[in-house]
Image (tube, rainbow, N blue to C red; front, side):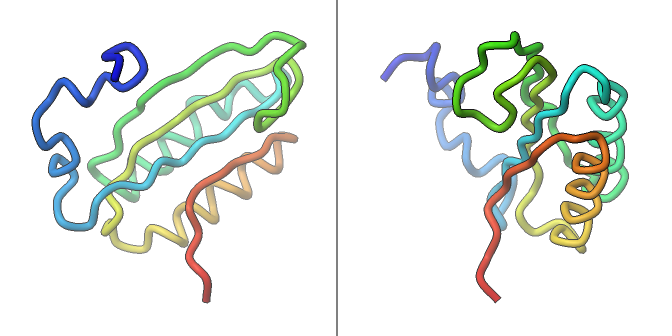
Length: 112
C-alpha cells in the first residue's frame, strides 16, 4: 500500500490513537457562497468532541464528479472520537449548519 494513499499506515497501530471507541470521519462540502462554514462546523464539533482532528480541506473546481457536491466549493474531512459524548447530536447539528449553506455531509449512521 502506498504511504501517499494511506498516510496513517506508516504508524503502527494508528487506529488506537482514538481509544476504544475508534473514530468517526465526518465529511462535508459546501458551495463557495457558504465558505464561512469551513471554520464554523469544525469549531462546533471541536467544542463538543474535544479530540476533534481537522484532517483535510480542499477547494473544489466546477467539475467535481459524483462526490458530495459536484460544483465549485469546499470539502472538509474531520476525524472525531467514536465515543465522544452526544456525538450523534453534535453531528446532527453540524448537518443542519451544512444544509443551511446549501451543502451536503456524510458520516456513518447507525440504524435505530
